[in-house]
Amino acid sequence: MARPRQGAAATPVSTALAALVESGALTADPLQTAAATVLDRVANGLVAPSKGLLGGLFSSPEPVKGAYLVGQVGRGKTMLMDLFFAEVPIAEKRRVHFHEFMDEMHAAIAVFRKSPRGKSESADPVAAVVAPLLKEVRLLCLDEFQVQDITNAMLLGRLFEKLWAGRVTVVATSNTPPDALYRDGLNRELVLPFIDELKRFCDVVELDGPTDYRRLKFEGEAVYQFGTWSEVDQAMDRLWLRLTGGVPGARSELRSLGRVIEVPRAAMGAARFEFAALCEKPLGARDYLKISHAFEAVMIDHVPQFDRLKSNAAKRFIQLVDTLYDRGVKLAASFAVPLDALAEDDKTRAEFQRCVSRLIEMQSAQYLAAAPRGDGELGVSKETASS
Image (cartoon, rainbow, N blue to C red; front, side):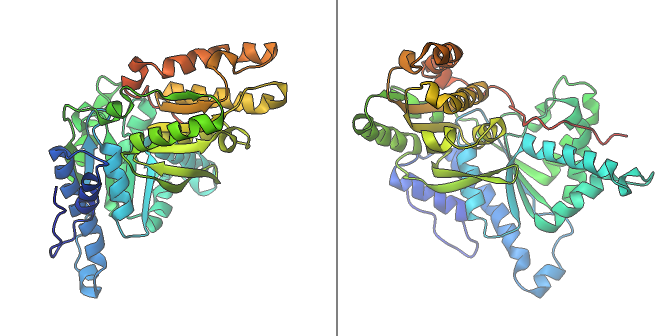
């Protein structure tokens, strides 16, 4: 497939997508190509207003129209978001999982209400928490947009009204079309005006082709390798390139509670870690949930056999597996010993029973073909802004 020619308007996402097709990392898909064209428009619109004084003075009072990428699992939404976010050449951009973003907003509202300003009868908590965001963000990218609880449903309308009024462009991925958001939810009529505004401020881009590319990456593959590292490392390297379509990957990072989680290698919605980096460092449930939100597949190298001297690492590994399992994240790993021998002593073996059961299920064709298992919210207590 030929790379798109550069014209007067840049085609950053289309060009990056075509390069991946040319390299063999991806199979050409007309729906992905069409979606890339929409994302090119968004990227160009975000850059154009900054070109010259007059461009800024006479720019539209509304934000650049965003995009809402919707389709089943494995159709390329996350990959396109990766390309788009990397290619938009502005600093005022942020990418975050939708439920993490909403948790942040609920938490900020709760803090504001306890402040002296928040106790005023005229206080607007939504405006207060959006104000600092408007100073820092022109592009807000939201992964896995989904509305499933009343607290988020009640906040959506006013929150996004103020974001759009502040000229923030929204680009989102979702498994659910806008008209089906919060379907059958309590007081759904409160969400309908927001859905209309979402469709006004975002082009709805359907990615509903017949091929689940994520499933094909795992089809026929042994996702677990057992033995000494010299025996399994080459097999893991081959599997990594299969998962990423031949893209080697690059170092990345995630931020969790003000901390930085180093990701040694990330590409095409997959991440690769050493066991020690995940389970021999002081990471916890929220960190693992952050990883599960950020990646569709996780590869872990060099999982050891566990004895009592590795009890803390064993507990973290169990927690990590539980989190990935609950979210439906695909796992590939290399182990020093077979699964039923992971725990060396009786006490550790008892703690590992459920973990081993889940590891066995996570290598099954049924698990690998399944869609993600729910939101896996980050657990911040929510207070709606309704009062």
